[in-house]
Image (cartoon, rainbow, N blue to C red; front, side, top):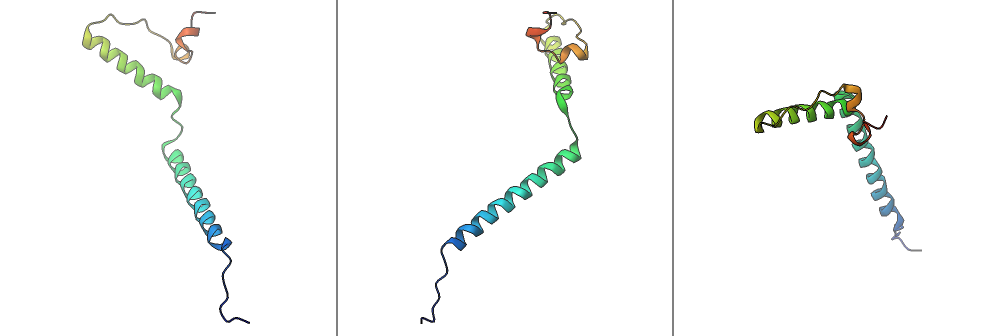
Length: 84
């Protein structure tokens, strides 16, 4: 019998996997907490930003104003708005 016992090499690989899973879990928890903190922004936020940007740029460069689009129409892609 030998007094020196060798550790199986698989133990080190499993600790790496465990750390990886732990880091992924913590990352998902942080993302979830940020989502809860900020809330669901949704497409309305992007639409408002785009409208404000277009209005400002048209005013700045002297282009005519675009016709007003309702919020419901704004959710439809421009290529599909006049098909109905």
